[in-house]
Length: 526
Image 1 (cartoon, rainbow, N blue to C red):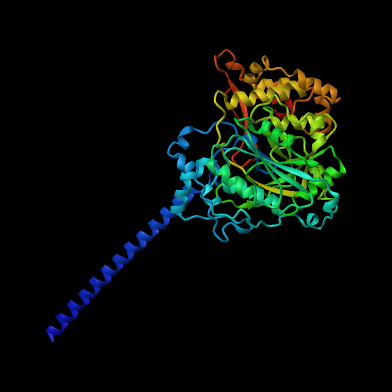
Image 2: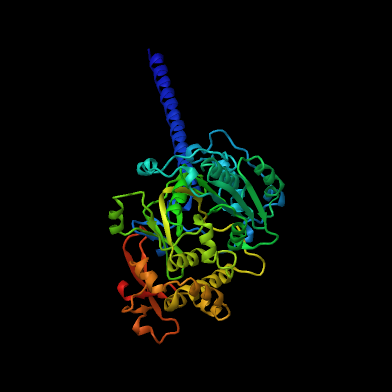
């Protein structure tokens, strides 16, 4: 009997020991699973695009309801180290291998962590996810994102509309994005109005943009002209080269990484048929630079500029928004255009003086031509029924030609804008850009001033009063300048008042720190 009891106790101890070890193993597995999941979540956050969790906010980057501003061009040369590990073979490789269904209907493309790391190797080449772009068909489908009013709107028969030459300038553009731009034009434009596509190669060095590109263009049903510059001439002069070769009634300029949607062209041409002095822009939708998701743009925005003459988007004033309720398809007057995508009557473009030939590479040309159009009898409009997608990059993948810097080129171009078109208001620009003021002494704008006289253009005060009456420029009875602490005026570097937006894009916050070009106000702000 005692032996049985002892055996029972030993058996019970073994069972408890086994249960303990089982619980220990289960606890270890649970802890391991928890930490693995935590690491995966942290990795996803680290690899996520920066715009998903902004930590700082540029005051110029948020307007209206906190919507981030989108600009068409970016300043600055690409640091050499970003491409330092890529060979010529890698740079010249055409890895376009579309996979069925990838990115269809404008959907985002998601990669595994391993693929994501692989895509980083080539991201710097074009400053967008080339790995994903090369997997998406050049004929991918897109959603029809137009509002019902636009889908129902009737336009003249294509045979009654003016024809257009679509001009696309590129420099070392990715093969897949360039062809996707071209194919979206061909596939979503009435053949009766698409006179030709003109590709202007600004001295690209990629081998796949030579004979391989030529062979592909020969397979298309539409006429394609390819013009190749023998040396870098920049966006402005390259567009002028394309315009000189155009035969269409209307010039339509597009960037080389766009996707046109259904019904994009008819509103532009119909409006120019109504008014040949209307220079019209589509709503610019966003193609995500990392996932290539097609995201609808905001229709009730219009273009403007800041004191530095940098293009910015601004919300349409509430009063105009209410008026638009009567006809949501009506054009939106825009004080300035982004410049990458627009249509203009070819003869009117020539009458206006095309682009300013004294401007170099790119930068400021969109502000200059916007001022010229408005002040010389035309109008700049955004048409809410026309949508074109555009890849917006965080940095430029291209450097400037040898001997030129982005700062000097941009400031030189903006001097030409200010000195020709802004009259006495140019001094506000020079107060915020003293480096441009130094350059202005050596820049001759006499020919463009003569053009302004010949076209009988209005002054800049008229532009502010009639085109942008709700502008931010100081009024005649306003004070303008910096606000400094009176007790520190004798110091070598007295602090100035700065007024910035909060991280959420909401109310402004005042603080005192070192003076800079952005520490300026007019009396209405303080």
